[in-house]
Image (tube, rainbow, N blue to C red; front, side, top):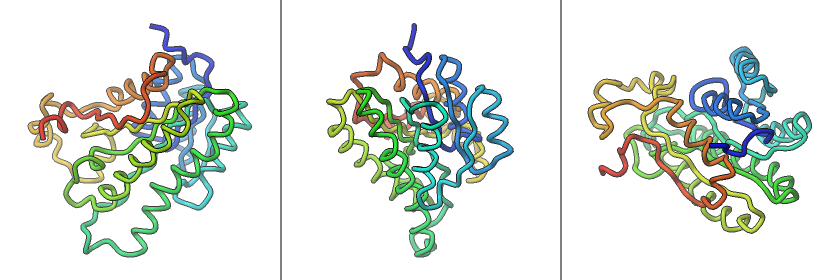
Length: 244
């Protein structure tokens, strides 16, 4: 199947590892011109080489960085047709252990980076009457996960943003969707000290997902065939949410 992605210009945020890296590789394999963004220059350079794309070094937790990254990608690619909003997960905390500074830092890193990136990409998409915006959230946005207070709270709010924005831009042929990873075998699981074997037993598919599983769905949502899918929050989790 020709996904209609060849020649499209994509920006993948948080692309130096894990899900972002896998999405960038998948889009490039379909012929997209890809810019990748992350704060770690060395890892990012390796990904940029692999996708034969552009590497943009920005710390998305800092003010206006996401908008600047989009502007940079537009200048280097000539535009952005596909925007993958992806940021690193905030630290594991309970409500009582979450400080004011942690709340504000997570809000800037998760929420305002998404708003800034989308705001910068939308004018060109509207002008061309075409665009794909995918916001990577988490199953924590749908069902809270123990000790992930920041992610539970803020990612759920992003789903409201996705739903409302999708209605505002649908007539311009721009789709806006959220993708929720479950347990994907990435560095994030290691950082959260997840027992992979134990986690797999609770998943109906009886295995931990791969970054490539997730990237395949992101690639479809970026495609011409997904032109009528918008305002959705889609789980890629081996059936976990359906089993609750």
